[in-house]
Amino acid sequence: MNETPIFTDDDPRGRLKRREAIGAAMAGGLALSGLSTPAHAASGVRTLASHGQLRAAYDHVIVGAGSAGCVLAHRLGRAGRRVLLIEAGMRSTLPAVAIPPAWPSLQESTLDWRYETTPQPGLDGRTITCPRGKAVGGSSIINALAYQRGHAAAYDRWPAGWRHADLLPYFRRAETFSGGANAWRGGSGPLHVLSLADVADRTPVAEAFMAAAQQSGFPTTPDVGGELTTGVGWNQLSIAGHARADAATAYLDSLASGPAEVQVDLLAGVQVLGLEIERGRCLGVRLPEGVVRPEGDVLLCAGAIDSPRLLMLSGIGPADELRALGIASAVNLPDVGRHLEDHLLLAGVAYQARREVPASRYNHADSLLYVPHATPGESPDILVMCLSVPFVRPTVGPLSAPAYVLVPCHLRPRSRGSVRLASSDPRAAAIIDPRYLSEPDDLAVLAKGVEIAREIGAARAFDDWRSKEVYPGPAWTTDAGRHDFIRRATDSFHHPVGTCRIGAVVDERLCVKGIAGLRVIDASVLPGLPASMCNAAVTAVAEKASDLVIAG
Ligand SMILES: Cc1cc2nc3c(=O)[nH]c(=O)nc-3n(C[C@H](O)[C@H](O)[C@H](O)COP(=O)(O)OP(=O)(O)OC[C@H]3O[C@@H](n4cnc5c(N)ncnc54)[C@H](O)[C@@H]3O)c2cc1C
Image (cartoon, rainbow, N blue to C red; front, side, top):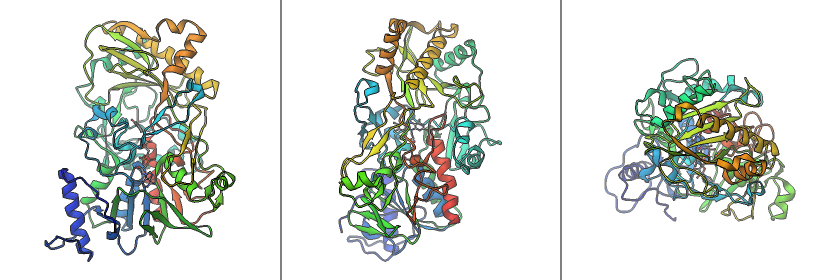
């Protein structure tokens, strides 16, 4: 059997886990050459060094140890289920993962699948990077750490059972909030959420943004993730003790302590190649070395790009398209891979500063503003973040320090795209076409976002910081100039969802329509974007899904 290394030997955390794995393997009666120490039962997640260490039987196989997969492993493990968690990436050893302000360096690193979109006509034909975490912890390992659930109304547009009131107990169950528990926030969940309202070392430019937004007539909110999710407030981040609190540290490492031994095995560095489907039932998952068949459901948690890809590779999707690639249809589900939705950001409304801008100790966006511009009282369509770094798209032009940038984001885009198979090769990346700005209304909302950002940027509270507006600058005076600037400055916010959405691909229990024994549980099932970044929504959906799986 081909051994797949789980950790590099120079990683102290890796050595510890490897020792646990070896001990557990011997306890299970498996022989590894060169070992003479007695076996002992490991607590927590048992990290398998190879396919050969699999247990004789599992209740569930989880594909993908990302934001959702780690939640499921934790909850099912605690419920006494025998779980195999399979992840294509490894446990991360990059120090930058733990350091919040270092997060941008993780894109295009070894922890990133490094996908990219097709050329986007709405963005002057540019291809856009589509980073996705390839590691134990998934995209929560490389993301920008913001952790917010957004406005209730965005969930209330989702199908029954998944609306805000249904999810609120799960948002609370997931988190330990730095501001303490209340009717909206959790106080004892695995994931630590730090409100920058509770720290003293916020960057002063973010303080100026708070004041400038108020001078421009926007209300403040004491807790952007609590009862009032509109207005200007301090960012909230998944951070515990100054370090990133990703899904793996929060949900897998915490299994090591607890009331009872759990039976959760992690097989990392192994890519699932497809699902075994026979006569309308999912029997297991295909690995390079064979098939693993659980006694219960297979739980697909490979994310908004790879979950639809794996379904289609297994014959679940648009039958005609799959047949054209030589893939036999198991069930015709035309919506698999369709309805791809993603938030847009615009980088940005940029200012040369009068003096050095102190760096953020967090994620560079210490304060932000949610604006329900289109429909006051509804969920926000515009978010403006205040970045204390000179971040503009290279297609916009140069920007040297000292500078700060206001970044408008579109939270309710109308453009919809797709994820399709490039070929029947199970290792080939999917064709990702978000069709950014294909709906003219999206451009108009971004234009409004730029205007809000410029108004705040020109407010008195920034006088002490602002030397001059560099972008959009004079370009903003004509229609042509405005449109040109938006097309050059727009990028993905990296929140793809909806490619296996509830109602179309999975039912309200997240079971794949027409296939028994298979559920999809990750960002792909979200029936729409939340009115904020999506990690909290994915986590809450996975929390609720774990109860559904346990209920059977
Ligand atoms: C650069 C970036 C910044 C972001 N910033 C934020 C932010 O600040 N706040 C926020 O809320 N959200 C943010 N997000 C989005 C958020 O992190 C994701 O929406 C969320 O993590 C998605 O969770 P998931 O479980 O659906 O997928 P993932 O967490 O991506 O997990 C999928 C897992 O499946 C694995 N996998 C895929 N295919 C296979 C296969 N064939 N075999 C085995 N394993 C497989 C992957 O390696 C991965 O570990 C950001 C995302 C990125 C990329």
